[in-house]
Length: 284
Image (cartoon, rainbow, N blue to C red; front, side, top):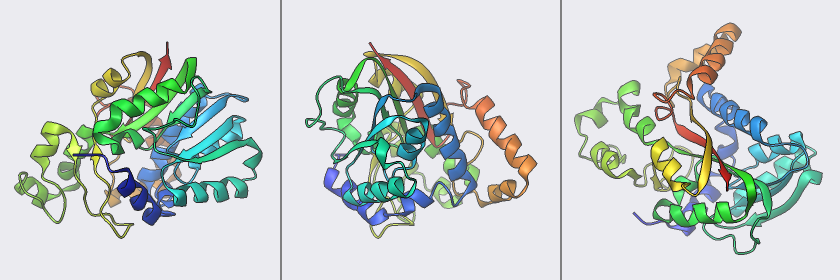
């Protein structure tokens, strides 16, 4: 399965504002946003130079700007980059934005070595680059200052594989070697970690292919760095499980769920079970 940057760019151009709204329209999305923001709080401080690599519409750029960091906003999609610009301006935080760059995370040739105190690549850019993930990691590390921190999140292999079971997708479980309703068969994905294109509910074209990770694989990918922290995102909830929406209707239940997520998502037995794996590493 080969990385196609033009297709990823086209997909996110068509995906448009859905990338912003997906973290607001469901309990799963809201929890995912909170878990990622927790990592930002722990590692990013006022005045630091931060690269948001794969910014999408700027949700985390805005959060980091509110802390007082100076942000370079980068995305492969010009539509997402323009949405980020608008959202940052609407938030009144454009003064904390140093640059907007349309670029592929496999090629930061426009940026010199050791440029940033912190480099962030949240939401799965390292999944979308498929077999070029090694090049992308080299670039993320290269532009980060020595002793700087890199924050990444990737799509979880185990989280995807257990999805049909916890959501009751009988068709996928009954035919694990076959494509069902456009969705790739389970067993080949389990063996390779490569998820081919599949139907998107929010774009006019198939969702871009991606590589799915285990925490161990992600840690080895950053073997030249020191791993500081690893967590799963949404280890307590499953995407597309609409029964979970009722939780948010009860403030006490929602508060308990958030506390459970934060208590459990660093457990070694659960870090692979969520939708994403989040990792903080330090450049040596």
